[in-house]
Length: 484
Length: 95
Image 1 (tube, rainbow over the protein chains, first blue to last red):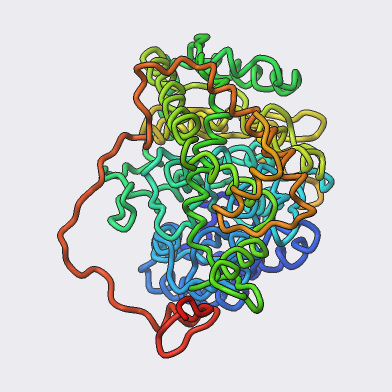
Image 2 (cartoon, each protein chain N blue to C red):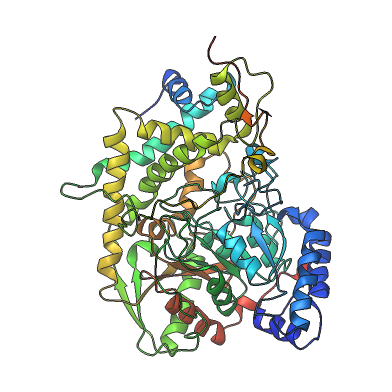
């Protein structure tokens, strides 16, 4: 069951080959067998999932079911899920049972899908290795001594080990694409504003975007169909029709213009990863695409810009966690300031504290122009590079991450080294563009991702470009031996 | 640029974030390294470049001023650390 695509699962459910309860139990059994080792889930929703599966089976029997009805899914623990612990992998929210649903959760529930559980992540989505989680680090199913990437590392590990047929993630600086790259998945960060952020615990509000983490482009398209769309509860949600993202999957790539930014193939990129990505681009040439070298000259500004903008926004967003209305509260506060400071000091982990401190400093009187304003200007420079590039090309390709999965603990003592793991993904968040990572091969048994960046609201084209590659290659069907 | 212990203590106070005395040298080092990374921005020529606050340069959407949410105080207070009579309790602020 766990080697089927979503459309195969849907067909089996609709023709009665197996029920949603059987399918859900199969995945719950797999989670039960492997989660102790991988630590991919923070919460497993056994009873609730089986209840949802029963309801789905009723719909299937009554022929009122939709295409995804009865298919299980794992949610990153950043999406508020009513009645379920929603911790954001933080001690601060380790007792937060959400009183409401995120729009993404609501839409997925309405589609009849079954929530298996909530996946581990970097605390408040701040990290690139899933090692900042209060609930412990996640292991990469391809090599359990290595990180799965982050921040959506639990969703990535769960998918790679086939503990769920599809999962949600969020991407603020690469948090869907980088773990997808390190775990051999198809991950898509949509255009900013495409998917509602309502109920998705905010890290950096001008950068955060939710998207699917899937086994292939078709599955990703099917979930994107469900979660996209305007939501008046998110003031940055975009009022724009949602196309059927599966409609163009098989379009020909004849004449597709691919841009290769020279800045994405320079110093810092592992030579074997580079060779793997170049081989993938050769496949596109054989499919009729043309290749053009392009330049994104302000790429070097992306990481430093991000480490002003994202911490500034996080320091503001996380100020609501003050020990008063929800979340962790310290014992015996001596006054209100002590209540705030100790609740926050005890509730947040090291990386979150670092970013709150950076953001607070960058926004403080006397430093705002030098840091925050300057970063916003540099953000426009980074963004303008893409606008220019897309005058000549349809999509941009390059590596998703500079290396394959690194060892657990390898970068935890050096925040700046960790930040550079997102060097190729951060720019698209700053610009608000959609980006994907798809499996492109292996180096020493570890997956390598090919990144595909598109123009605003060009998700259908990205999925088409990914799908056609997956028709010609089988990297995306590879599963680690221990989880077959 | 480099930060010292006093800077870190001041920022932590502004952020209402208690940090352990023992951890301060670590923050001084890490924040210093991060700001060293950020310093690269000062080399960029941004004259005549308008700041970009939002990826789609969107405008704030307005809506009619009508009730859209019902009061759910009791539900929301079920997860509060301490409440009484519908209020959130904190240490006494006014003598």
